[in-house]
Image (cartoon, helix red, strand yellow):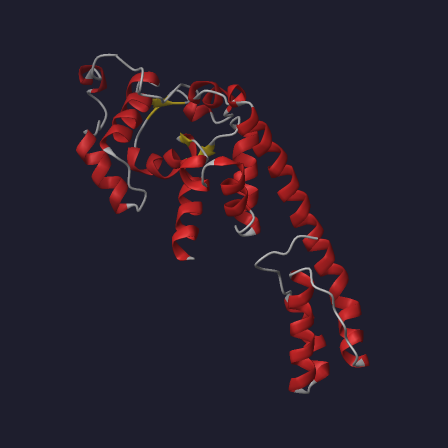
Length: 239
């Protein structure tokens, strides 16, 4: 089994440590748990430590097997992606798969040659400027570029005509948080290039972030939402 750089300790295991009492026995149990997580051979001689491990080890093995299964699933997806780049969906195709009715239109601005938003038809609404969107995004700690702010305005005030589910947009600032979930980026921009680089990053991510990566790629044809990409980037910087 492949070693990993973390494992879960459950609060329900505290009683096993308390029963050991002696610091040396507690240390032996902890070291053995680290050996299990790292895929090393274990050799426990103390019967009290053996009893604690009898309750703890099965759950650790179960967690490690689940981790391996996720890595293997992602490994196959990565091999397919880098082996056949044509399988990658376009931004527009991926967005069409998103079930959120607030974002049922393409937000890709690279090929958007439409004219500026006609503010005259929005006279009854607060229509922000690009600068206001950028400033508000920074205040909400989801900073976006001017280009992304333009895409945000194009989507909500041109494509959706300033409405969501037939109702006028009353507070566009609240939509900024979810904008991260509807902006797609290529995984290699944050996960490393090539199969080996990608896997090296993926297998070091916490379980919950691995699941977010898997979910994004399944839903958006191999792409990541910017929200997930941001989490990966923050974790890599913290290491």
